[in-house]
Image 1 (cartoon, rainbow, N blue to C red):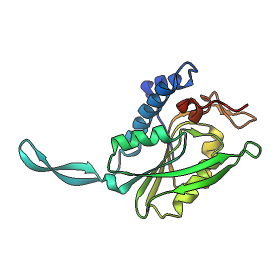
Image 2: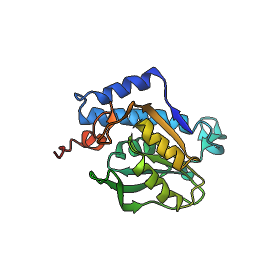
Image 3: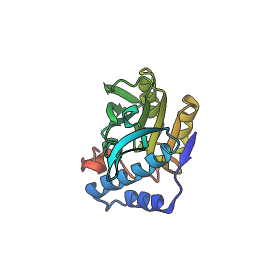
Image 4: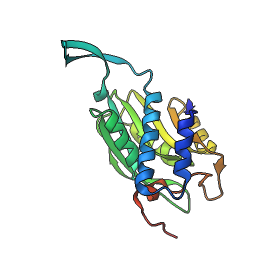
Length: 209
């Protein structure tokens, strides 16, 4: 199932990301804010546990999330600001890392690094700002599925209708939370209107011509 955020604050933040005048620090900060919005929506039906804490009136039990049952996985490097944002919200969750490189000729992704923790029976939040063709997302989901999680949820900032269709048809049981569904992919498989290369813009990496 695909869930797209629709509130005005989200749209305002997306516009800031599109603006080429937005510097790397502001870009990462905006990505982080949008990620928190996605987490709020994605976990709104997540089961509570009872947690005993010490309050000003003594020990009492309150509802809380079992953060230790959540793994935040990211596709390096563009997903790092998103991962950091989730870890700030859920500091007891565990981080995992995948690295993929897009082949500019075939437009397909190649996995070259897998550092995922034990996912058995846990919920995995897979964060990646850009969902273009859907290829790297599908590949990442396939890797995570081999770890036997109880549930996989993807969090994305921008995506194309074509890429979303690929992921939904390939992994129909996955819930996709996305801040903005853009118009299309162009002939070079870039999202239009998009926002440029999220990894490059996050870290001031010079583009290779």
